[in-house]
Amino acid sequence: MEMIGKRIRIERIIDRNSENTVIVPMDHGVSLGPIEGIIDISKTINEVAEGGANAVVIHKGIVPFGHRGYGKDVGLILHLSGSTKFSPDPNNKVLVASVEEAIKLGADAVSIHVNVGSGTEAEQLSELGRVSRECMEWGMPLLAMMYPRGDGINQFDEKAVSLAARVGAELGADIVKTNFTGSVESFKRVVKGCPVPVVVAGGEKMGNVRDVLEMVEMAMEAGARGVAIGRNVFQADNVEKMTRAIAMIVHDNATAKEALEFLQSE
Image 1: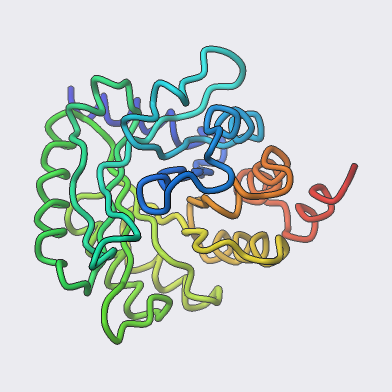
Image 2 (image 1 turned 90 degrees about the vertical axis):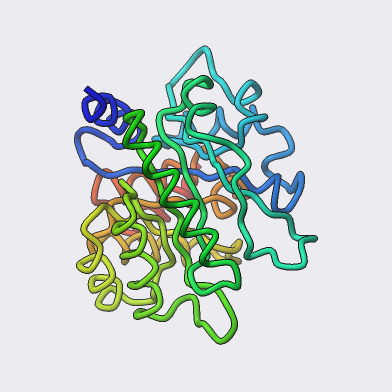
């Protein structure tokens, strides 16, 4: 029965027609504080939902403020990891919520952040293993945010990203989020080496929306099953239209050029 529950929940965060997903992480309030775009998080969640996002990622205390009892529905992914920018080691992510709490809050999935290669990799892998076991027990989908981060590690290097993504799959993730490696060919190899769906991270805020849309187009061409983009969506000039533009590429096979034209249209 548990696997049926997992499948039902996954259908709430992955589009049935395209079998892809547009996820907008908004868990940045813990790591960065009340930054632009998530100060009024209810408004922003409303905008990304209306723009066609499949799910948002938020922390447990924000769930009451993000719940929508109207309009287009949006999936809820509860983020279980945390660290702040003031930490002596911001790469040290610790568990701040549980799978059972996610169930009580009505979440469709949980997410965990693991920095492969960091000084606390061992503890983070142990936590990933434990959360994965609980997700199997409760039929809860697991999104693992897997990043190669640590001294001397290039977090966009193909081999480093491939390793991080594979670790997520090996330890029980249903979906892996990781960095884009910069080219279709290199990211194809990352996707090929990860047996579960891969979604591409948005990373830091980019200066040019064209760069964001082109990255999404390349990732999808490489075989990604969607995106998990935060700041480049919730800090956009028009959040709803930016979400829609990305959804056009992810769900409707639009090109970055077509999505940009839509974004710039009145």
